[in-house]
Image (cartoon, rainbow, N blue to C red; front, side, top):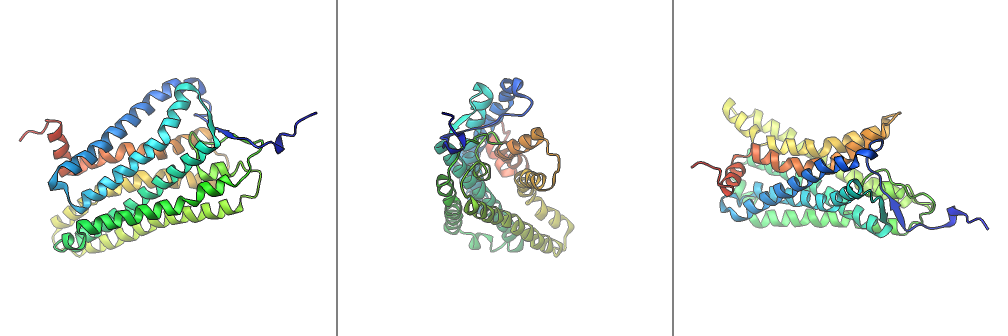
Length: 312
């Protein structure tokens, strides 16, 4: 009797490494491991410095600590799986583990997008109402805003694992990334996945709306800056936004590039797609602490003081 594999439900999926470079996976694991450790160390340092230095107990740095927490969440939920592939060639992941991973990846991704939006509002208030800044963004209000957006992110992605869990998965089990994403797992289902498609689209639109609101915030920031009479004060005001602009570009450029290639590229290179997808989760947690340490003097000075490298 021949078993019809299309009627057999599967309980695990197969992740991929880097197409065409399978023989180099052990070498690829070295920079990824270094990036992972640097990201963990950098974001933990940011959190530690902000927590212990009372001079940094201001709204801008509270929001920065939220960004560091989101970056840590992204790193912990995705990079260990990637390292397992590149170090041990362990491609298999159980369906439950995969669905759990995609929940955390999407949750922390939306959380980071929300934090970047909050930080753009923070920069607008700081430039538009510098004298009322502390009165508008009090510590309690910052905590309330942070908790509200964290709850929003959790509730937004909470249906995703349940909608994936109800689907049946048959003979197809090969995913197209080194980690699990909702849209990737959904495509492998052999049952009706229209609910997943439409809700996944809704989640994506919610996150992209954050980028639109960030752009709108900077239109108002630019309008405010152009109304400042002194050229030096204009530059000073804009300079306070440089770190945030870098963080926004680091986060959104890989997402927009990947989405554009999926939609419009006729001959997509699997290698390029995989590298961009991996960069989406590797680069922001690595670069955000570096950008803020380099461009934000208060953070840089306090970090160097902790390392006993700052000359007083």
